[in-house]
Image (cartoon, rainbow, N blue to C red):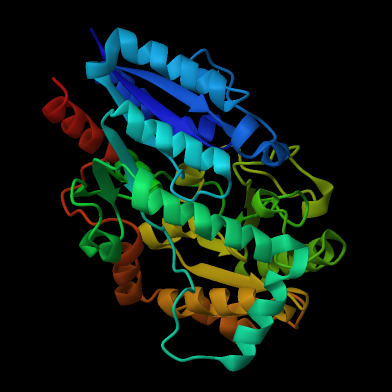
Length: 401
């Protein structure tokens, strides 16, 4: 009987997610793959953020916890010894249904695995205490029920960590995470971020093709045009509006294209769908390639904030961070973007200001030492070029009998 991998997914599941978990490669390793999309009862109000979901018989969609629990128990009766659970983003227990899922995983006593890490710098702990920032953060907590949301999450996570946490194998791609002690029964294994793993095959198999034109790739976020991750906790986006952002962005792109003699192409966010030449981007093309492909031959990566900029680092591309007069009013965003700037060794450009040619030319010069450190901190803990599906294959074949 085939060994079976069940991927538990708390969000809307897309073709993009199938690719980044390398599930087609795992199928070729003779595993049966099944995805359990749980968003309809875990975060039902988040479904509107996903414009296109993967329709496939391998993707099972559940409307309530009881339905999923019954299905899992039937699976175990038939084939428990050959089932392996792959968990995605279930550690952050934002409501009671998350906790119920984690409690059930532990009760089922099936081998579990998760890919663990943050693929970009995050402003968390500060060596210096900033009183002004502390009070501003407290004020934000009381807006939009964020304070109540965080208190509930704290309690649920406390219960999870002390009673229901089960991770047999933890694939860590952050250097800091790999050195951190987890549960006594958890085995830490060196791995890659999704982006780094997918880039390995591109760099090995794709020749240096000649391009018809030079292009900069703009990595968009769902916001401010669409709703994004703020739907999870019913919060606000970074604080910019489509009425001001897009006119400024179009003007800036016009000037940038003229100065650098290239075209700007839009890399669509995986959650959203655009027409090919949307007017809000000034009729610029929206790439039909995956980001792992489109960034490989780009001459410049542009974004206000995106974890996908790691492709720029991996492929040694210049990275331009952009902001606006609206965005700089959000101190939390400013602090986070400044951390990106520091760790990448690149400057931040305000698209509402007069274009600074000297600053733009400086951005085109890559700080290779910082890029290497970024890869080691946020992209991979491995040195052998082994992809994630190969690591998962070894774990299952060596530990499931």
